[in-house]
Image (cartoon, rainbow, N blue to C red; front, side, top):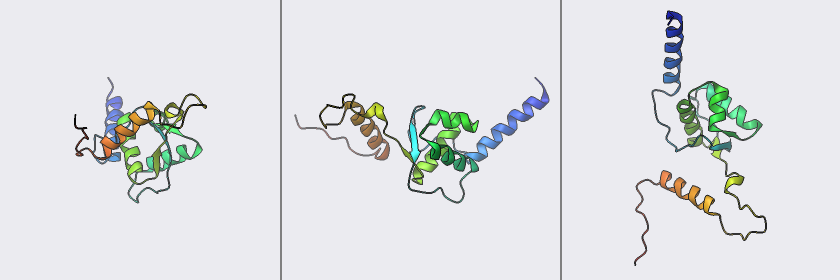
Length: 137
C-alpha cells in the first residue's frame, strides 16, 4: 500500500472525527431507510457545513439517511450523528411515509399496526426510563 493512500485515509478519518466532535453514536435511533424532511427549526451556530448540505438536499425533497450519507460522501454513522443534531434543533423531522399509511383508501380511520409500531419505538427512544404500562390481570 502506498504512503499517499494511508495519508489520505488518515485525513478522512480525522475529518470525520472532528466533524462529529468525537461522537461515535447518534442520539436518535435512525434506520438506513429513515426518511427525513425539513422542519421548522434552524441548526445552531456551531454546526458543520455538512449540516447545511443536508438541509439543502432535504429542501429539494425528502431524503433517506442512506442517500444523505452517499451524497455527502461520509460514513453512515457520521451522517446519522449530523442528522441527530439537526433533529435536536428541529431543522429536520422524521417523515411518516406511505409505508405507515393505510394501504386501502377505504379503510377505517384507525392507525395501522406499522404506524403504532413506529410510534412505540419513538416513545421508547424519547422516554427510555419510563415504566411500561401493564394491565392488571
